Length: 236
Image (cartoon, rainbow, N blue to C red):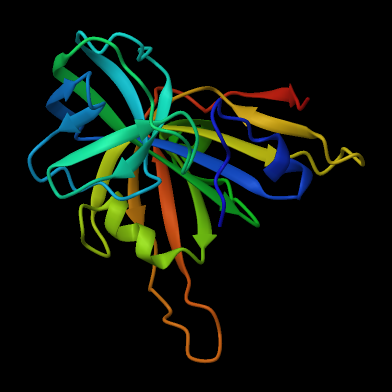
């Protein structure tokens, strides 16, 4: 499944009626070095695959790379890689050798549906009435957890999210785009606040296809204080 090209734009997916999930997960790649004459970046056992998106966080040198921008991996070998501005595109040319580079893996999923689930625990304050019987006087919210599970047919990408395993727990941030069901044009999305803190786990079983497609479910649990805020996001 083709991923959005850089700069990141979810409009095409939204127009096709799909939700888009962007995850920036830790741990980051640290201590990356780069040679400008070859545009080669080195990190022992980097674990990256071709097409993986990387957010450039910081580093010394690496002139030409922009902190906060997302680049695509061009795989070379287990310890070295190059970058491109687009998926499978030309090698990105940085002009000064780099050291102490920090890159954060970015994962983009498309889903036919995205669910918003709320787990709430309520508490009651009981007050005795005139007859001494305890009556509920007020209900208060003791705890609240917000989840965003979605199904994916890209089962092998679980290994990218969970460090080679098919299940686990990853932390990072998420940004979500969903089609607005009230917009007939299909060109307006509901967009979550950018990069809210989250925990990512596999939700339920992995169904390996026989005559059907393989699929699984991924759960995003919000770790932010308060509810995730949504805004209308007009697609170009």
